[in-house]
Image (cartoon, rainbow, N blue to C red):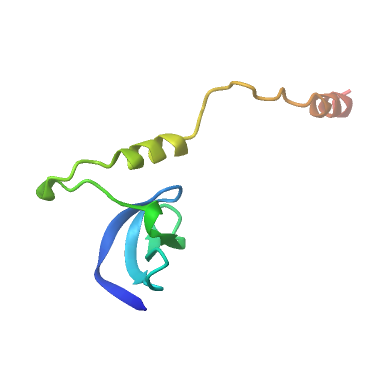
Length: 101
């Protein structure tokens, strides 16, 4: 059964990011609920199983930020450290030198 959510619900899909659930699919007893979610950063639509969906903090409801969201955000941050970066190829330098000689 498909249920359109009105209003949409702000959620965080682990591994995908924040978005708005605008639908929910219930396949029955032996299945997780599926949250149909538009991801804010990418505009992608994902059908995420219930164990991957988290509500974010809500000050008026007294709900603190979910630790799973903080861990997911930390894992998704780009690492700008220059560790284990390959050295640039010298072949382009040789080509430039040959063109200018």
